[in-house]
Image (cartoon, rainbow, N blue to C red; front, side):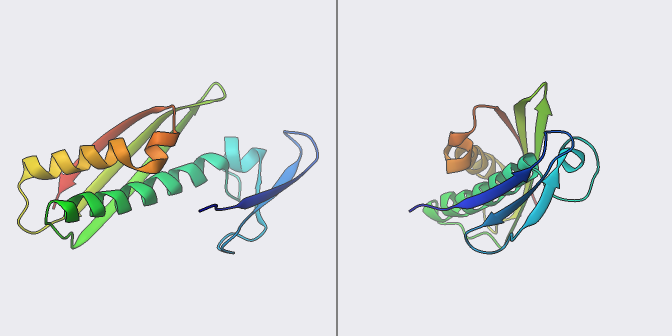
Length: 136
């Protein structure tokens, strides 16, 4: 399986502007630039997209890990915060809360950690990955 995204960029780093599109069409010409990446400007940025990818991948992996242990989640909500320092992505912080009938807190923590270690996006990142998992 191969997934694609494309970007166009015009101009210099600080004064330029770009647009990102995805194969699925969910993003189509979405703007990004210096202000949306390093300030609070309008548009997306690579770190936001990595955060979305990591949260989505982690949530799905956690549901698979739970199912393998005979638990079905009613609800999983994951937030991912990506830290960019000195031009490097240094941290991906996952914060998950889930409602999983019948599971103990200890079993849930073990499943949450297994998902963190084994979701494909976690495996692709070289940054430190931390996790806070809460059972609802």
